[in-house]
Image 1 (tube, helix red, strand yellow):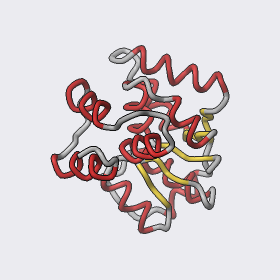
Image 2 (cartoon, helix red, strand yellow):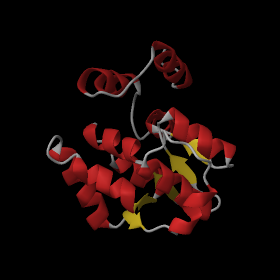
Image 3 (cartoon, helix red, strand yellow):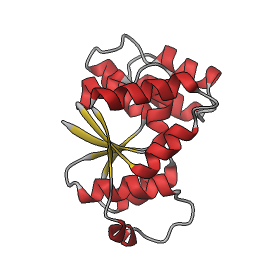
Image 4 (cartoon, one colour):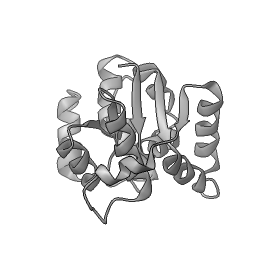
Length: 168
């Protein structure tokens, strides 16, 4: 797949892990709606290194900010728990048939799936990277997500990821 649309959290956490380049290797181009880009930049005071990595990817051209047709936002079901970035990311994915949506939030994934959008998230990216031999193991990155970020990983999710990575 040469193009994916991303919500904020996969970009944020992959940048925090210093693994943002995995997206370029796996998907070549990543489209980011304007609201998602604003959410990414808002993290700069707290995580300047992560935002610097995101800006560098934007300058390199493989991470691209994309506008959306705001009239298309009305196609989404009324879901008050979706933030602006999630709504725009789902809409951009709907407007670009055949693209994969990178999104971690459960509500957003459920809405996108109901609308026929293929989804994966941060852990899915890590699993695909291991499958393609871009990283040697998933476990250390999951450990880093758990210990050094606020990324929520339930024990069941960790076990499923490790099983999928053949690292149990």
